[in-house]
Image 1 (cartoon, rainbow, N blue to C red):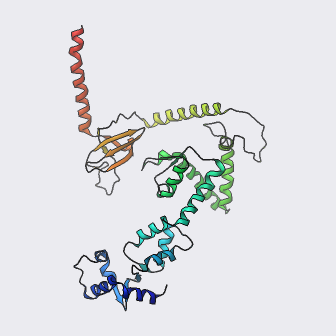
Image 2 (cartoon, rainbow, N blue to C red):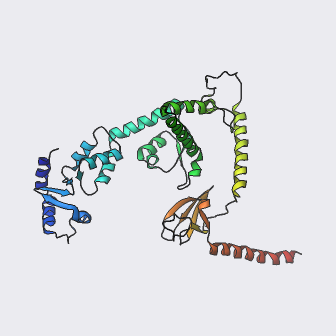
Image 3 (spheres, rainbow, N blue to C red):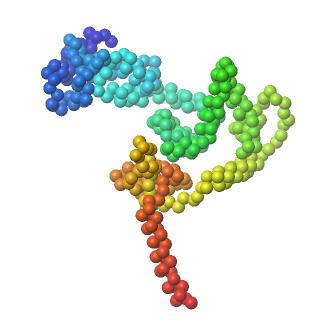
Amino acid sequence: MTTREIEEASSEDREFVELRQYIKDGNWKGDQHKQYIPVCGELCVIGKLILRGTRIVIPSKLRPRVLSLAHEGHPGIVSMKQRLRSAKVWWPGFDREAEKFCKTCHGCQLRKSECLEKIFTPHRLPQSLRSDNGPQFRSEVFERYLEDNGIEHRKTTPSWPQANGDIERQNKSLLKRMKIAQAEGKQWKKEVRKYLVAYRSTPRTTTGVSPAELLFGRKMRTKLPELKEESTECEMRDRDGEVKAKTKWYADKKKNSQESYLAPGDQVLVKQECKNKLSTPSAPEPYDVITKTGNSVVVESPYGVQLMRNTTHVKYEETSILGKQLHCLMLLILRKPKQNEKN
């Protein structure tokens, strides 16, 4: 696309004709071009072109074509935005339009499905899949693929990485091997592959068997000599349950964990991120408990905003505790006369 094409399209665009006059006169009182008002100090006119700093403002007629050119080769959303910025083009909301263009691209959607097929096909489809709340796991393509294949999607609680502790621990182990490879001057990809072979062939303390044996039903052959041994799936499950129960008991004892008695209707204070030194640990206004499932609780603010948090991130509001104590006391007082009558 040449600047001459942009000049011709700009001269035919009624919005741009008025916009050029607004920039020259400095009159921005009307609401007709309010999307340009936040950047009006950066706009200038050179001939028939409108520039925001050093970037050319593209007229609406040419915007679909610019998006199509920027998406050649099917780059991702981030790469496409960087490509547009490096090309020195701009218009109001072009970030949002670039995202929409990528998400609605038929070729990209097919490619994403193919990537998922390559991951799941060799190892069969899982019954459920656990992920964090990353945007890649909340995309329409990903959700549709899981729904079409009958895979339950379990999302972990936001702001609680411990809920996906297995993955976080594995990422830490991978990063450690990459650092060791760099320190020894070796290729980190080869070293990571060696680590994965060792990890997949090593029996876990929880199950007593290796991940490869659990997945494929047979031991993974390595360079080390070994003898064949037989074990049943029931034995593995029992051993896994016993070790996990002991681990949970030890962790709860170490952290002095207590049972959460939160119930719908309770008022609680929710932990908030400290913006500065004067910020309070909890949000000032109390939240109402809507639902509680396991260690996850959904709370609602006085303004109707709902949040999902781990129970460790909420605590009873003092007035709520007092109300519960008074309620229990009243129940005891009401029960005593009935017991005396029976006597």
